[in-house]
Length: 89
Ligand SMILES: [Zn+2]
Image (cartoon, rainbow, N blue to C red):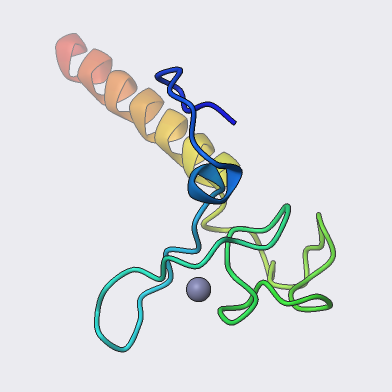
């Protein structure tokens, strides 16, 4: 296995690491479970977590990226409109 720089390393040194915060305060260095971001001890265990694409935690989407972008666009429109109205008087 080679790194991004092209150096050869054993696969066990290039695999994605868990990175969870340990009780010592340092990131966990254990390898992450395949296709997951955490190791088997930090939430990557088989059967742990939600199905891909589930929306169980979504209640109303008020803070979703799409909703916040919509609000940003509308605020910008209102700002522009106020500027235009002020110029009329
Ligand atoms: Zn871990």
